[in-house]
Image 1 (cartoon, rainbow, N blue to C red):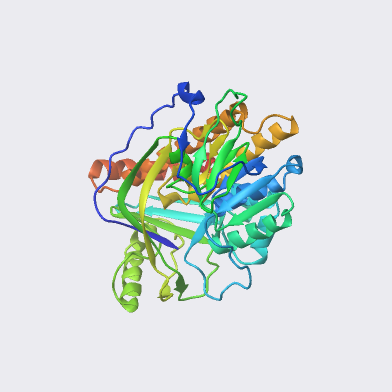
Image 2 (cartoon, helix red, strand yellow):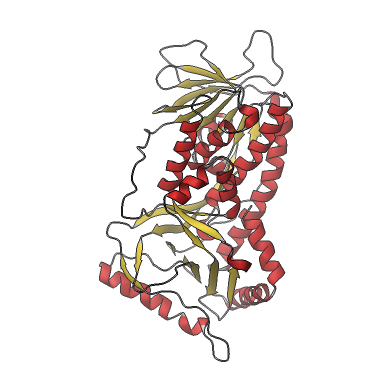
Length: 439
């Protein structure tokens, strides 16, 4: 479960400015002097960043039938994680995986590994406002799963297994860090390389026909390409912890309550002793029962009570929003947090990254099938257009929700109360919301 607690105040929403295409032909270089130089091996695709999104990108291409003759490289700064038995204690680093993301992982066999390890599907989501009786319930007909809560380590273990299965065409370099990039001209000249040159910290030099930046919110690929990133910090921090429930339950409902200080999912952040921590959590949700069961209405499902919090499982990280004005350049594409960063209240961060993968892999597969240049802007711009249209809409909606529920001013409370109640009464609208969020 995740909890978000406000530190007070809000930033201003920076306008997302349009992109300029005029500078496409410029040569951009970001270099660090190296002891060794020279031309290294040429890869068809290099993915920079071996987290969940980067590893999934490499695995998706490696398992694509049209990439059987291609050379793919995954660069990961960290060491290879030894995959073995899962620890008995659950990790507090989890992701909410949408059905669309599960479909992507299934397309190259990773989801089967996830299912063989451990995950928890949820079939219902119950959200309510702390300042009114407004409530919205999302559920699926025929007991379909709305999503899945999966530990990040489980996802990475599954992705590593699928990368090992295609090791003949996907090479993974662990403990490898890029320190310099040299970008080619859009129009190749006879005395210049047509590929992106990558200098590694150990002195090696690589070349690639397409560089995919999946290196997180502080993306070096994005910075090296000179792409503007519009970002700001929320005056909030997210807190995660592993919980133990006090009674047996199906535990297949996702609970969220909007407070003026920020949305909360079961546990607030506190420096209290564990016993006080549990008492505080219980009191927060007991105070919501009157909202969940207003007089004259049918009983609604109540959140479970909490027995204890796993020792040393609490962690905190700051929240912010960011968006790259461009996702692509000649022979370069950005995916995941390198391209966008959102507030976690909707659990869409990694799902947006997996959506980028599905879209980019589709266009690259088509290009490979047709014998086209993988680094051509023609299909890269198609990827950018499709994903920016989806991501910007979702990011704007999440940011609006965050701001709308960060105040207890009466007009705004009335507005969001009316909005929640109206949306909850319109099943087709809720279906559209769930469909859009699962892409």
